[in-house]
Image (cartoon, rainbow, N blue to C red; front, side):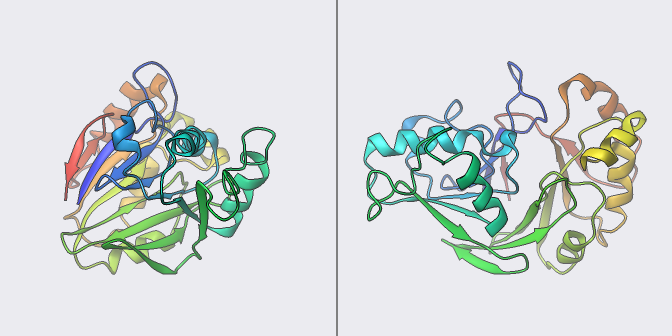
Length: 255
């Protein structure tokens, strides 16, 4: 499995892209950054977009990707995979023919650019050669993580979350777990803000990792607010006995 980091930041500034991971060239997890990072040739290879939640920094570029695909006249739809609540939010507030065209009925309802596929928490679906399970986490709106299992190895990508439980139980039952992608948005002295907004600090991450039974998986951190990058990095360095690395935009990880 190849994971290309299109964006991994909790803020959007020059040089800091918002969240999006490209798996095996044709599956996206979140859509904060797509069209500014991928060529047209790369964009048309995308078949699925898994959405963790409907906050704009995780969904923004679906709109521009759909627009590109519409005028490229692709012969297959772009399938957006998410829970019923997340899909309903996207339809109501983005693809509503006010903020953006409803590409689930364009160019016509029989041949739409976008197709929405509902996934239920706890349900496993097969996308190409990988198995995907959505697991609810603890954010301020409905948010899921995704357990992604393949023959080469499995990963868990945790969307925005505060302290949570179910996803760690799922991770502990994956025999070939290679990596966990998890947020750390704020420094320790902003714990009250993190709790209010459903995010983790470095100390919060340390507590969460105690719920992971094995110490083998590589832990990849993302979603840092750029203003606090140095503080968070210093605090993360204090966590012992874990393989932790902070992600950078543009890097490619092989599982």
